[in-house]
Image (cartoon, rainbow, N blue to C red):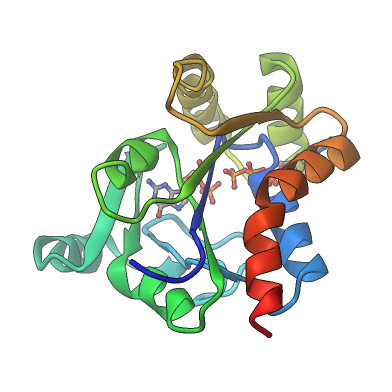
Length: 196
Ligand SMILES: Nc1ncnc2c1ncn2[C@@H]1O[C@H](COP(=O)(O)OP(=O)(O)OP(=O)(O)O)[C@@H](O)[C@H]1O
Ligand SMILES: Nc1nc2c(ncn2[C@@H]2O[C@H](COP(=O)(O)O)[C@@H](O)[C@H]2O)c(=O)[nH]1
């Protein structure tokens, strides 16, 4: 595949991936494009269909998966999530750096493709802080929160395995985490800006 290298942002739910990637996209207009995933979970207040996610049903999504329309898909906290081939192609056609926000299962599946992204894990400073962030966000029921914390424990262990990620960023101080993220992406950002 040609064009700038895509970027996979992963890490536990609540670690701060969306916060960091939204800021990155806002500060670098015309450089990044978000790969809009599909999900069967319900939209949160303020989330827009087609922008944050393609919100869909399990039946419809499973049919598309069976037809080979997805690069990867995974079950997370009782819902189905996945990256369609079209989501990535839409960004790459514009010659932008494609950002994929996926869980650890997605990372493993993407590693089996020819996408060749930069793999970045965003980690919280501790489980306690992660739980506080998720509770304060007020997007989860107690049941879905517990499922996310369980998935987070697994994610935090797996992210320590050598070779899974190019960089693991601890998102304690947001400014510092953002500077680290920009630094690792600087070369790709420069390449896109130079073509403009
Ligand atoms: N460094 C930080 N310090 C304090 N709060 C933070 C920090 N980074 C993010 N947050 C807050 O933590 C909450 C979770 O962040 P965010 O929604 O970006 O996480 P996420 O990794 O994208 O989660 P999900 O995978 O569930 O979408 C948000 O309310 C956000 O404002
Ligand atoms: N494997 C995939 N994981 C995805 C995808 N899109 C999002 N995600 C991950 O799901 C959880 C929960 O997200 P939320 O928006 O419900 O809080 C989070 O870890 C995301 O990274 C995807 O297409 N594939």
